[in-house]
Amino acid sequence: MKLRIDPEFSALIPPLHAAERCELESSLRREGCRDPLVLWRGILLDGHNRLEICTRLGLDFKTLGIELSSRQAAKVWIIRNQFGRRNLTPFQKAELALRLEETIQNQARNNIRATQKNEAASAFLKSGKQVHTDKELAKIAGLGHDTIHKARVIAQKAPETVKERLRRGETTIHKQYRRIVYNTEKEFHRSALLESAAHEDRTASVDVRHCSMETQLSGFDEELDAIITDPPYSREHLPLYGDLARLAAKALKPDGILAVMTGQVYLPGLLPLLTPHLTYRWICAYGGSDSQSAQIWPRRIHCRWKPVLLFDRDGTRQWIRDTIMVHDHGGKDLHEWQQSETGMMALVEALTLPGALICDPFCGMGTTGVAALRLGRRFVGL
Image (cartoon, rainbow, N blue to C red):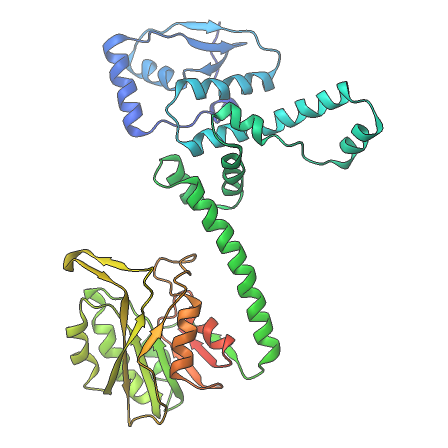
């Protein structure tokens, strides 16, 4: 019988990891291809990886034909066979099981038609409601039905990079599901707040510009009430702090303030970069929650706060508290460096008054702008 590869069938088989493929090839070199490749009407159902390796190495192999009623039955056979032949991660098992969802739904509907020929069954079928199949899929995959539901949500909404991590077992279904649900709820909440702010406070505004700090800040002439920003903390980015202070000296109002969030590691080297241009005012502590800490491995430190360096030109009349408490450390949904909205709101509120013009030259995901808008400030983000 002539052997054929069906792309739709082969796509049902999760690819081997590099280690698995290496182990399979070593086994075939030592022992040959002991198990026959399984065919249906000449189409390969099981043994795609063995076929490729044996063909490349010139190894002999045998085939075994089986009888199945249809292509759909062949797909079901492939998927069920994978559960028995492969060491799959929970997400890989769930993905395979979900491929059977339509088949099981159709089977359930057919069973209803055959056994419940009454008005209730007819109304149910006409309604188009989904037959609940999670328990059956969970039984096939050896997972909980709640896990199947979470995997379905991930498959629909998560980016491919997250799915790949799940397939490799580098993260968990529960963790990624919680992240999706949390972010969805948070995005809805954020949109509602922004819409409310836009209607309630006509003085608030947001202007996001794609340009260099040098280009934009040099265009301000004693116009900014505050520069509130969170630049990168690494050693290679330290020169940016000096450039920031130099530009801020011209862009800030006489009583304006520069607030720079930074890490602790390179703090001794930052002050000499900033002080030639502006007057040192204070260091505020941003953080303070007992439930969150960052591990600074080179220094063996559990850090629960980060410095916010305050500089000004001629002094400011506003009193400022030097501890910015952050009770919600969420907000990493868009980037790992992202600050929480509640934390940035507390910082903006502590340093500025309503209607103030604020600039963030390193606005990243724009959290400072969201905080400014919600608090009735005007914002320019670079």
